[in-house]
Image (cartoon, rainbow, N blue to C red; front, side, top):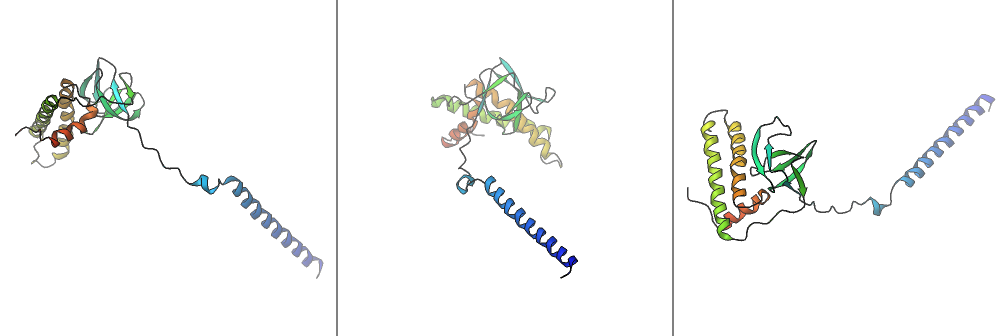
Length: 200
């Protein structure tokens, strides 16, 4: 074996050793970085706690979007409680009656962990059920008058207006009977269970 061949063998040996060292070091470092198998298993997620939003101002404008120029939906009163969905800069995102996102300035409300329950008096609940249905019927009739469903292309505008009017007309009903708007699903279920629905 001449000198050139010996040089090639030495060079290949050095490369082979370097590759082995690189692989060993990478495996070793990966082992140091990887948490043990027990730690890798994700713990069961905790149940998400629902939050609510209490109006702290004497009056608070609820809007379609997170902007002071966004369309007004309804004016809420102090101590009205809504279901909180999240926060955007300067605004809280919440639900009213329609289930659509609505917004209120974060200077007019504060998050709370609980909401008052439904009234215990069945007479109050029955009256609230009837009044809420009338409010929904009013919203539907006005939206239909403005955007007749049978006219092509009106459906989206009809739905948007009906939902806005649902919120506008149902909030005063809940205020009148001292029911938090956050209890809207519970009241709806109570009305259905007891068949407290006015004849149309």
